[in-house]
Image: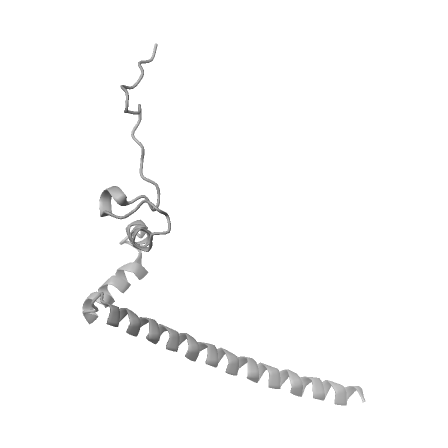
Length: 112
């Protein structure tokens, strides 16, 4: 016969779920809490991952501080980089489009 757990206790401990970091970080248990989500992502990333280890080393070497100004600058730099890379992609598509047009003209001339 199994014994019942004393009042207020469960027979097995509950493990916290993603976003329920209130007992550990002093934040609410809502899954939408950005701090809890970021902490969960960082803690779930293995330091043996070469990309993650390289990123941490690069940030450490640059002496990047976690303040509002740095975050804004980083965000702007990343947006600028994305825009520049998208521009290069569009240039590549333009070149492909020109080649296809020339090929279509040549194919049409061969048919006639």
